[in-house]
Every structure is written in C-alpha cells, then in structure tokens.
Length: 230
Image (cartoon, rainbow, N blue to C red; front, top):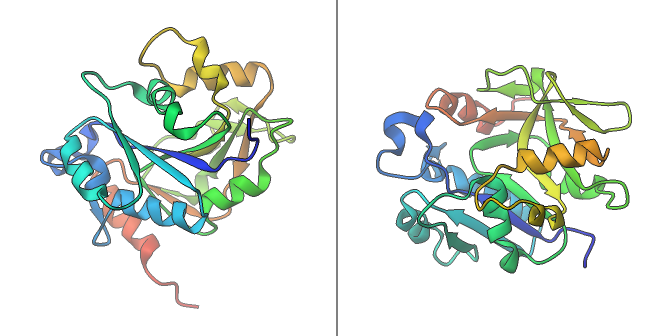
C-alpha cells in the first residue's frame, strides 16, 4: 500500500438544494462562477498538484456532468438508484482510487492563496495521521454562516467545536470505510473514530476561501477571482 496520496475523489453527486433555481436544470458543480463551472475551478487546483488519478461521483442530473467531463481525464461513477453520501461514495470509488490514502474534495468552493492540495501533501505524515483536513480560520471565510467545525489543538489534532471551518479538501486513509455496514453514510462517522484514536489532524489554511453553497456565495466567490492590486 502506498503512503503518499496520488488520487483524488471529487464529490459531485449532491442535489444542490440550497442553490434553489440555479440547480433546477444542472447539478451544482456546473453552476458558473466567474464564467466557469465550479468543478473546473477545483480541477485547476488538482491539475496544478499533478495528481494522477481523478474520480468524480455523480447522481443528480448525471448526464450533464458526464458530457461536461468528457475528454477531461476524470473517471466517473454514477450512483444509482440512491445517493451514497460522502462515506459510501468514497468506498464505492475505491476500485478506481486504489488502496492507499487519497485526497477528497468538495466541488463548491473557491480558493485564493496556496494550492490546498499541495499544502496538504507537504504536511501529510501517515505515521501519525489517518486524516489531514484543511481548515480555514473563521476570519478568512466568505459565504459561510456557521461558527466553524473544528478546533485545532497545539499538536494539530482536531476536536469538534467552533473556530475553523472545514474547507472541503483532505487526505484520508480509506481502510476504515469497510467498518460500516450501511451502503450510504457520512465521512463524519469515520472522522469521529479517527478523533477517538487521536489520529484526526487539521491544517490551518493561509489564504481565503469562499463557500459557494447558495446563490449569495457566487458574487463573494467572484471577488476572490479578481486580480489583486498591490
């Protein structure tokens, strides 16, 4: 089993209900920000990090994403008849992703700053970590109303609580996925087990991040795409 991640799972199966009418005829990863589909912004980061294997799970209006991703090198899995959630979806994709640790990424955020995939890879320590999550300090977050998901301890270990928002990108070992009997389940359940074993870690992000989960997030995200004037 390899210890360094070289595959990424893009979560692209959700219904995007918070996007309201914008997802009536398209899946959320195809909502445009700055004239480009959300999933393409994420793919730019993936390609800059030279990750060899890219897999996306699809469920809602999958034919639209299949057409968009044709020729991109992204391997796709359509979850049918039911959506498998993040844990079940990742487990379903393991035959394509391989048996080592992998990146996972949500496809509904815009980043300005260091490439989150690269900074995670540089900080990854498989001897200590079962997962390493990129976490954004609350004052660097746009478009997200919550007070945060995690507290990062002095040693980098995570506990639940306000302070840092999970940015939707991580490195995670996948062997624990087989401990769950349900076909559909959240990765939160696996994180809880890792936290109990003191092997869930977080990395604070030194940049800005925008959650594009609702229409209100689109203009905020587009401000991050504007050139900076020094």
